[in-house]
Length: 260
Ligand SMILES: Nc1ncnc2c1ncn2[C@@H]1O[C@H](COP(=O)(O)OP(=O)(O)OP(=O)(O)O)[C@@H](O)[C@H]1O
Ligand SMILES: [Mg+2]
Image 1 (cartoon, rainbow, N blue to C red):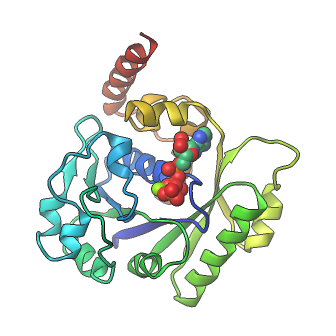
Image 2: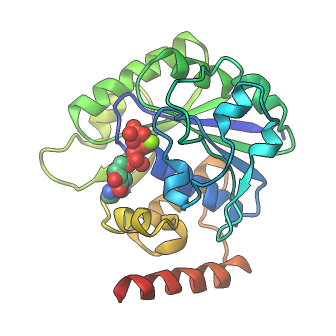
């Protein structure tokens, strides 16, 4: 199989891209799929903050600037084993994304690369999208977010990068929310993931443990699991693996710490 480079994109900010990217990478790792997560949001890096790994000396910007090789910037997240190229919090100025395809080419051994993108349709976002062979567009079920999603989908079409589908996040099932059919027809794109609003999400970010590990049975976690399975072509929920016991133990430890 060719490697998959999946861009997690959105028109509007704050819709859940980083949360979804971190958890997809966590789940792919738990499926034993070789993958690396790249924090493409160099102006507001948050992957490292979600995972509690922000003290690294280097980041994606150093790789893009040609200061170090991509392999040297890979950090292993101790609790989950996910491989991450974080963006550094040290940089105030933007380092353009023009070199991203070259950077991704240099880490060919990973089967899946997930890129957490900044929001909007900036030149950086366009360069990130061009580096991907598949995009997942995240939206929330409201008109402003879905309207922005249509812009990203139009951009993807104009640069000929396929959209694997839409993920609707933070669903509350309130009457004022857009229905799934309305979102699909506004975007002319299939919905491949529906993630409910879930208080376990901000809780997991506060303790810096991916939701999929922190609360694997929470509704949002189950929805993320289905999305990961859909993306890697397994329609069914995964069978428990030997890592589950380990994940469950770590999750319990963090839960008990939080209760104190
Ligand atoms: N399903 C959910 N349930 C509850 N809260 C959620 C859910 N998904 C995301 N959030 C919350 O939404 C906020 C924004 O999430 P996140 O940072 O992942 O969005 P983003 O799209 O990456 O934002 P940005 O565009 O700024 O990079 C976080 O505080 C997170 O806790
Ligand atoms: Mg983000």
